[in-house]
Figure (tube, one colour):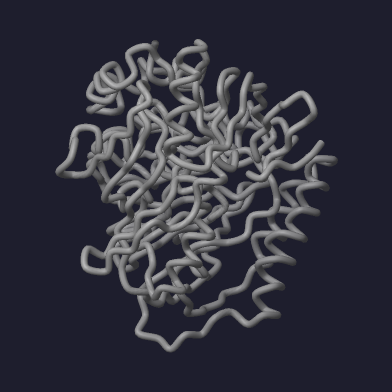
Length: 443
């Protein structure tokens, strides 16, 4: 096996696999265009040859949203910042740029995104097209920070859109699932670089749920991790700070983020997979290992964390008002099921936005993410968790494991028909089709 430029593995037979290892595909053709013109030409050629077309980033989706047996477009040569407009406070970036490179480049320019997720390995187009988000009282998703888009449509033409140019396309394409075209560049809103103070603190689950509304209201960014089989959580509050900068010490940062959160955690996952009966005991110890800490740094060094232990994930957005009840039901399900869950459950929030198929479209949302260690059977846990989430009109993260179809999704997304009508207009022949889009959007 050899590693590709985008961090996935590819065998001699051209098999592509995602980061989580649960999705594989064998495209008939692969291209890595070095310009928008080359990409458009590749799309036109694929259309003439009757091949479906999908772009694939770093493979961090756990669904088959990027899988194809047709033309696979790799955007690793479409990288870098095109322009910075300091009057409009925007940056236009090529679609294949990894978030970690964008974050570092912006910081060198004294700029930052307002919010971001906790992983920054993805390409900007892959992250926004699937709905990647962080947590926040007033901001969360990456797609909601988009001010303009450039995409190659099914006829090979290049279309630009914004709130004033093709606004109906802009409303949908910011989070377009790869169904409307191939995104080639994104213009993000940015702001002057700022400092965040992070306060991480263990807290009982009962206290977090009892005080959740207050914790959400009093902090710009609040999230927590609950350790199944325990009543323990680890909470994180990020708020803007006037400084001074007080980053994590090199040794203490390495000890908690690398040794405990990655190295030791990896060992506990190996043990749990080999001996599932040990998981509740391990969880009780693991949930008490991390201590309280406070530090102040630039945004991407606070929002994001290294994630070296590979897993498979399901995440649903429920109405924020339903979070406490939903999480109590999830806890009760785990306790009565006999399941052994070795990964913490992650909880975040997002304000309502105006993006057609955003998981926060039109409603204040809370996200509940369940994980299982890569290679561990996850279906029973995810199926049971999904029943809990869908009972509260949950919306699945587009890039994470779920079993929902177009019929269900049309019920929980008020603007679903608006998206599918736009798809009919932009891609009537379904050039950008695959099995996943057939399931979630209909044929």
